Image (cartoon, rainbow, N blue to C red; front, side, top):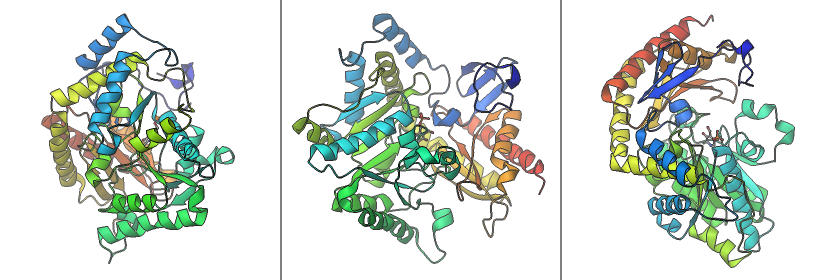
Length: 450
Ligand SMILES: Cc1ncc(COP(=O)(O)O)c(C=O)c1O
């Protein structure tokens, strides 16, 4: 559609957009009949592909029985079941925890920060109200979530409105690790920065540290260094600081385990999941509070100091339950792991030696490809070249959806692309993703005038 003729306040008021008409399996189709192989689930959302019958049937059934009942008046069967099912899959420290169901990653992170603050207040530590987060993190678009986010370009417009946050470096071995340093030594070095930041702010003032277990949108599927989160956990425990895992993008099975942090053998105090939980069929996010957080409120005021109109929405919960059931019934996490290895291998084969590909990384069906002007120096392309956007456009022209982002080097420059195909993806489509992507990379690079 010509954007000038649209009444929607789109993200860009300059770029025309195709009109999506229908989806089927790993593919979307526009009104012109063009096919797009969805290699990124939009923003790592559509984990069951498009039009999966199970959540659709669950939503229809729930709409016909009970669409909405305000959570201050009623609880509902789908909300109770979903919360219990999520806790069953969480680490032991969540066995007697509780779950808050909301509608987007941003608001769920906002609620998680508030919950951490409330936890300390309930325990008589009212001075704890500061948060520490990492450079280059993305935690959402609302003001609290954007404040803990560390992506310079995304924060810039709103800088005067944001709350002050303690900041430590990202765990980003491709750019941060010294040549003579092991992965584990690098992980310890960047984790130790948290302790210094807590001491700088005064432990009595710090409520929580928030981080993405596998960094998503702003760094491009960067897994933590070995031992990094174990050291982070130790530091949080030593100073009474809560650990919030933002698994909005990397959770819900995307990296091959339902919770991404499980692979680090570490449990957070509060976990936030979203995108894959609703698989794009309903807007959902969940904040899981561990037993210790819930106990503080139960033994204190007994009331959550946060509420929203659409909390624990029955149709949203019914859809997520069907997503969970489908992932398990069809053993889809086995496919995430197997197809993830395949995707890594085919990307490596086609792009691993490309002069402008610096790094191919990730876990499960969550993979990132970082582009560089020069492999040796790792120098990025100039931001004005808009390589990431060109890669997205070139891929769309070849019938492939990939998620582009820029700013991985310093919040402005550095280009990468995120691949997050559906958990149902077939081996032949994994091959096709790599084939179309490699062609799109050459198209996009040819369009850059250096
Ligand atoms: C790690 C992470 N946290 C939070 C968010 C914000 O979620 P939403 O866009 O649903 O508000 C995102 C979205 O990309 C994300 O990747």
